[in-house]
Length: 135
Image 1 (cartoon, rainbow, N blue to C red):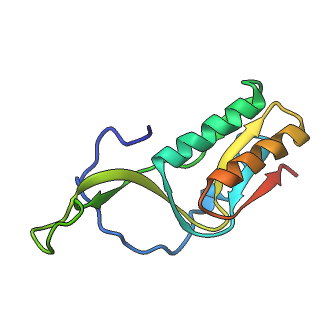
Image 2 (image 1 turned 60 degrees about the vertical axis):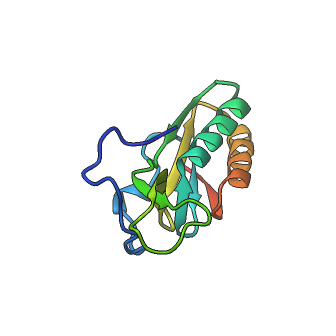
Image 3 (image 1 turned 135 degrees about the horizontal axis):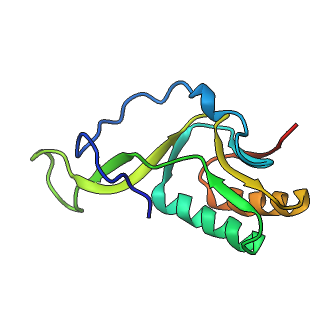
């Protein structure tokens, strides 16, 4: 699964969920893409599951780019542990997603196949998404 090799801090704070990076709203690599319509967090295992679904649908023809990376660690405390005693241990990695951000890109395939792959990806993601094409 995806995770950073090194991080400056072992545990992160939640932080704010506002703003979108201007360089992540346009198609850069492929002809077709999957764009998020709302903000949220996507787990590393979800990113990998969507990648597998898209690749299987395309039957390894064409090319797929993943435009998101899980760089934020989420901590959890074990079940039935009393309050206090510090923050929990790192549990999994997530990626923050903002509205309008491109999540996946595809190229080298027909539009109908790309639309079907995007539909499969949409069903696995925890956010509403839209299929976009290069103008």
